[in-house]
Image (cartoon, rainbow, N blue to C red; front, side, top):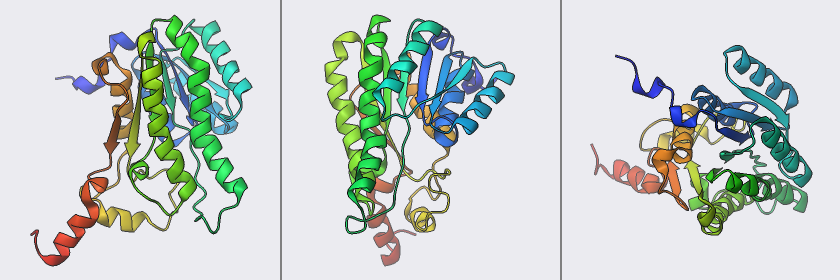
Length: 267
């Protein structure tokens, strides 16, 4: 029997998706999933070598994708993305604001340049993206925008700029969901927990977070991509302005669980 998850979603054919931070890691997995379901996909990233290579490999597999350099903090480059989409497909149906950076500095350690860099990419970049694509998306009858936030957007975190940006993405999504509802544009946030990518592969906190995560493992990039795809699909037609956490139960109560385990309350 054919795996139902491997079948093509015919409703996605003919659509166009823009995924930022798509040259590698989580963004690349998201872009691949949309393309495998028949969407045209613009892989957008500042990493030109990686992005071009990823797009070439996907095209070799028969997928309809293009790479375009995008600094998400540059409004003019966002307009160039919209121009490409208009000329290629005449529409934008999906935007995934996935691009993100982290500096791993406390308030005391951070300079205003550190703060501005993280907020600029993670939050202002998403704002500029929504602002740029919304008119073409609305003209095509609507669509879906997914902001990649974090479970750090529900708590404090040793990196305040990263945390503030992820909290901000949730608020931005809710405001955008209200503003563009009449244009049939849905906007949601996906909030992953520990996902091991090039962004955090060497981070000192990985083992501790894994030990605390009730599910006992990191989130797979494919699992995040599947959730993003669902929220962008017609199956989520009545979901907008929501925050969907995918973290193996970490923010649900990791500290309480550890306390209970240490006290012998759980076997």
